[in-house]
Length: 292
Ligand code: R5P
Image (cartoon, rainbow, N blue to C red; front, side, top):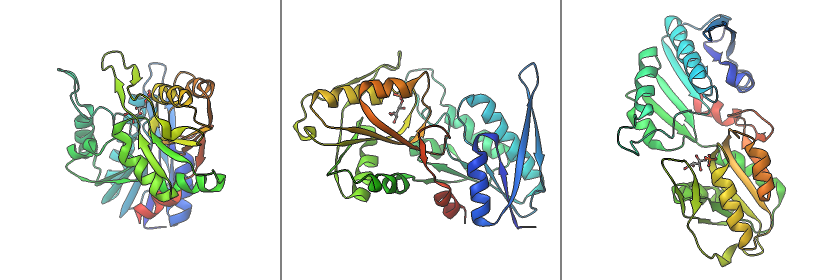
């Protein structure tokens, strides 16, 4: 048997299978039965390596259920393996990394304790919303970027002189990295979010440099689509040409994909950290490299 076991959570089955094949690891699948009261019964199928296990599971909706699943997988892995590394392709709760309003609980601090308590040796996240969230962990952490994989996809589209746009200042570094890989330039809009309602507004006024250019809006994630929709509406008013969206994690809640297209976006491209209609970019190679 291989020295490494990949323990696959239900949310990342395809990714786990691809990674196990790439690194020639033994794949351990999980079977889930949900009881009428909502509890999950998780059963692992396969033999876990005594040496090293790698648990792979994204924490997308239902977030709390999938969080319990990953903690359970880590607990079981630790009963068998000396080292348990945990790959979280999409880290739910990553946006709750600060006390924005008085009294708010910083849930990333809770996650840090839970993962350590369950027995994780190391956490590998992919394009986590912000690195602040990882600072609460007292075990090893690593953030791996999917930007080169996304850029590879866009290179094949052969867009003419596209401009990279971040919908907010927080994503400026990401846009810069994307632009560097694609050999293009970038800008970042000014976005404000009402912390109580969650609604967003674009504060940027006139922007002549987008006129008549194809744009790639780059973000770490799309949840409701609010940020991308507001940015698209603004950029269309500035007479841009086609608008593409590139993001690592496409949650696309509440019909967001349809709303984004209606706002004027030509195409949404995301990775398979969250499998779905837009996840055209496979990041199994990048994760496999990070693991080894
Ligand atoms: C915020 O800073 C993030 O980078 C995303 O822009 C945001 O979380 C996306 O959420 P939504 O799609 O709901 O606007």
